[in-house]
Image (cartoon, rainbow, N blue to C red):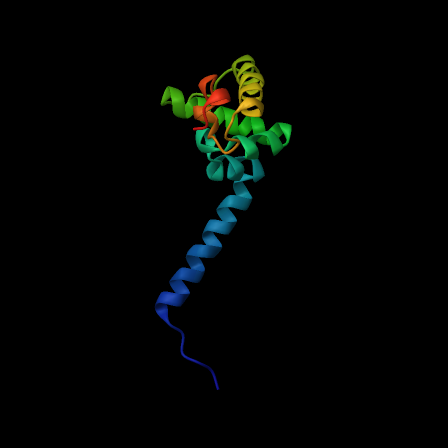
Length: 110
């Protein structure tokens, strides 16, 4: 005996499958960029990321700061990674978002 199908469940399942397919088709790098927090990434999380995730995080952060979707240059990203790492490793509050990591945060927790 079969159970009746509910249109709402069927629609939700179809939407979930479509989303999963889209993310897989877009590739892991694009999926990471979509879910990445950019400037809201806590310093503790940033310093634990591998090099590629740091690049994605910093690119997204720079795009957020510049309010644009234009990709920053590789040199800009590299310089920002070095600066953010230095600031994050020195923050009094290790959970400071990278967009707020600065010299003041070294002495006063944010």
